[in-house]
Length: 156
Figure (cartoon, rainbow, N blue to C red):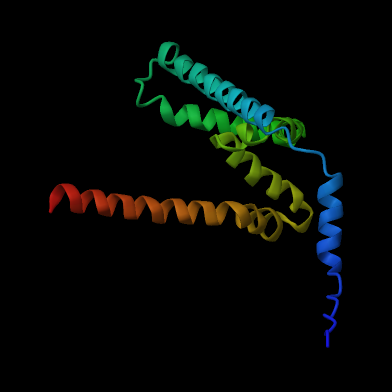
């Protein structure tokens, strides 16, 4: 006597996912990687040019020129974000525009601008650090543990 196996009902989520995957265009991974590399490198070259300006024209040492260079790069990023240029550029450039400090400044400025109608304190101040806050906290905590490990290795 043969027993009939019960037919499993089709999972609508799996069927939909297969349909979406079938019609989704393939990502141009190599092209995106090359573009991100070139854009990130160009941003760094601009930063290097700004630093060379501070060294040659303003008379800073290489170490002393680092802080104003970062400040200028952040200022440029915030200005371009305010005019809506950086977001369009970042959409095209991908990770190349997100990794340098300019991407971090863009993130903070965009969040602040998005909530400016709610006021300076609760809107701009309260929402500016929603994304940047965790980045800052994890960066500081990571730096602490790296310094602690370095201290243990070299001083104990």
